[in-house]
Amino acid sequence: LLTFFMLTSTFIKASAINVDLPKATTSDVQASRDAVITVYKNGNITLNDKNTDIGNLGNLLKEMYTNNNELVVVIQSDKDVPYGIVIQIMDIVRLTGIKKMSLSTVLKE
Image 1 (spheres, rainbow, N blue to C red):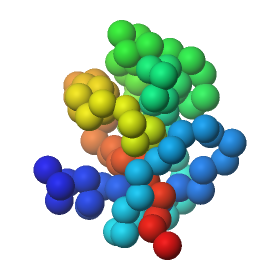
Image 2 (image 1 turned 180 degrees about the vertical axis):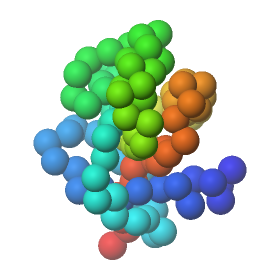
Image 3 (image 1 turned 90 degrees about the horizontal axis):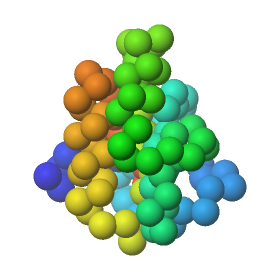
Image 4 (image 1 turned 60 degrees about the vertical axis):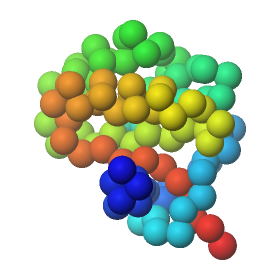
């Protein structure tokens, strides 16, 4: 599981998002991202900066995937969000048929 996270981690310049991303020494720069799921430590979830909830996330992703079968999903989660919620979101992404998914981290300096 650790290898999975290390291989799928993505380095993204965080703009004005108030999420304390975990740090990783093996991150890659993601040039473009089509769907960004952000999970805040207070439990709020956004998809491309639009508020949603975990129950509606799958439907929104399916709609996006129908319009773009090359959709890439990046999950940004505050480091204090319970691990189980991140896994649940990863399962939702997989169940939609989306094949490209990564986790966002901040590169350790």
